[in-house]
Length: 115
Image 1 (tube, helix red, strand yellow):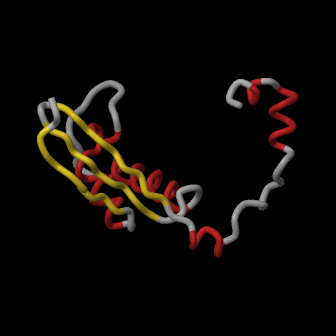
Image 2: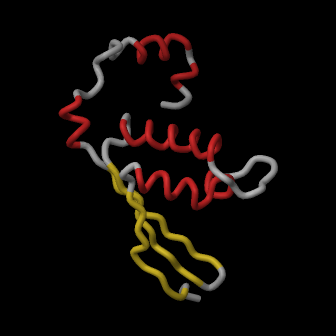
Image 3: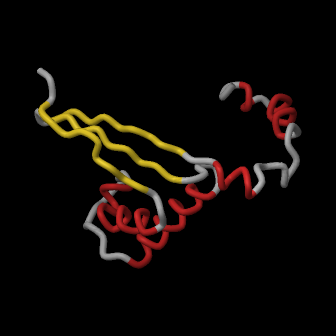
């Protein structure tokens, strides 16, 4: 699919499938949610975490972008250089902003990594 959208005829056909304004209604978005689990293994440890929130297509994505921009503009951030991940660039400041905006972060399991 990714390769097909690079071809102009296919891209035009796909873009013509839905007109502007034909996305989900506010009621549909209010019922939507996401939950993502991450497993990290390193340094002899294994950690399972979960990030969850409401509608990922519109509402939560907008929160993530807006809170990241506010974090970069307003918060005291760690000194970094070059291309870095959001957690390296914004750390706990972004975590606090997203939590305050209603996105949840939980540690589900924490222990020793299997050898």
